[in-house]
Length: 484
Image 1 (cartoon, one colour):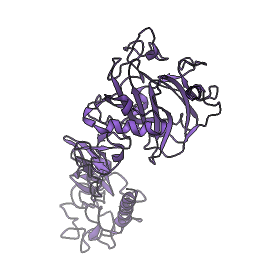
Image 2: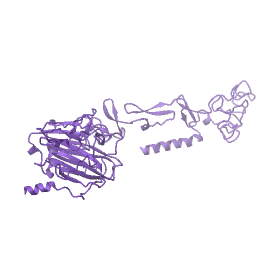
Image 3: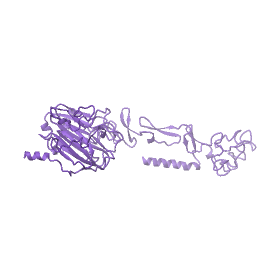
Image 4: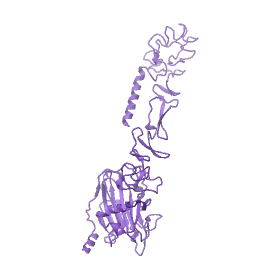
């Protein structure tokens, strides 16, 4: 019976091993920043035979239960090196060196250290975070490479919280060191949760995770490391996975303000309301990591959702808080000659526009919309009409409907027929058209009709000509609200 068991362990997987297809949606879109590395949780075992299950059906839940049983005894930290981990034991054998030797600058030949690096300490380690699947990686076969002494599992979690075990290799007495290649295909780009479980009972400790394009020239396999055919992962084209491939949050930022710090939470609390066992201002995210409450669904110390009146979660001096706006574009104003602003506290305000800002019918002057034709020189040779010498009308009239030019009788705003509102035969003064609706640009009456009262002044409000642009402004604001 023992010989049959050993023989079964030494048989590689068939060449036609089934590809694991991840068709579920990603947890989140790809962030615009590189990853910061997986979060590691490590705990020492005083009784590895009891703490570390040796069957596939019990290994993953058993190791998770062991790590979650006493969170205070764990050490949580960020893995900021490529996934080439080793205790670098050389007792005449170099099983702990793995396939990638001398591959990481600044680390020993066998790889970078675990939390525990002696040959006597039994421990379990769990790595969590998000794998960034780019558009180049989606829709094609990717082959993961594993070198482990003494056990390893890798589970991928999609946006529907479906778990996809890629490898599940529990510790096996007498056969501690394993190599494996497993193929997976992601149907969509984005962030996918990953969870790696690893244990070491004693002596040699090694964990290498690598990746290559699954072009079909290498069949998936899983065999004891010293069993022929020996396929070294580095020679087969695998490349060590680096921190840049792994994120801790959906936003891409580190989960803690200090990039070397992290904390894992119970998987049952993932994406649950509130803090999920994490400290104030943090929540248990979909990767089962404590992360800052920096999203509209979980914001601030209480990790509460933001409401309609303050729909944005923004960073402030003392953490994150729900706010009206993230920037000026999130605010709007109801008056012309005002500009929207978003304060540092996320409150919308409106300030008077600077002089010269365009408004309907003219420019903003001292916070009011003034017509172009409100100055001494009468705004040019052409006075706002369709033809030269016209003053805002379609004929040679001065914007009025009677024979008067702004007056109540045959006089043009003056006290007698001979005088035009001044001391000379001029229209409203001794210079050209010094008045506000300003139009006469000459030394005589210049027009046969007087402007109605509604057209005297700015021209930005009242009068039939103002109704059309006003309706456009209202429509634009309705559309803008609809988009929001």
